[in-house]
Image (cartoon, rainbow, N blue to C red; front, side, top):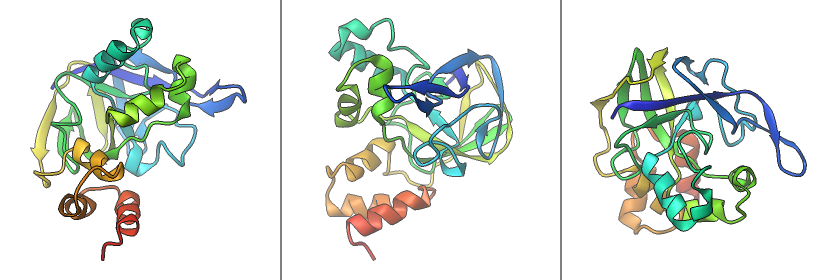
Length: 211
């Protein structure tokens, strides 16, 4: 699980209304992270990206392959860093990364907090109107980390698993719950997962009327 991409971006604009965005990232070799993510990286809309519970975003390399298979004309655009992620690593995806996982990466310690929910800016950037929907339908969302310990991360550093408190709640499991594709037992287990973003815990408890 070696890092092959680190990405940081400045404030830019996107779409017909020139909405502020941080989706345009540049490749860098080393970053310093604190509780709000990569120092110097911009997350424009704090309602959906950024803050302590969404400090860093990772996207699975294999998801780009699935996007290209569905949209062959995107083969030049659909590559590491283009979805707006901060981290790209070999052999990590929604099926083998778990909510609450704690990893040591360089001198930083990160914890998986929730899946990412894609927004319209992906469609606008790729100029592909239904890409956002395709990503959601196939649960190719990626995931967020909170920063447990600030530190430095460098290309080729490895994700070293320190703790896995939820052995049955992968990121994909959580997405099934979010998108109404899970039974009641899985819903309750996911909503009570250790390390889950408290906002998601509250939303799921309200949605499914859990006590």
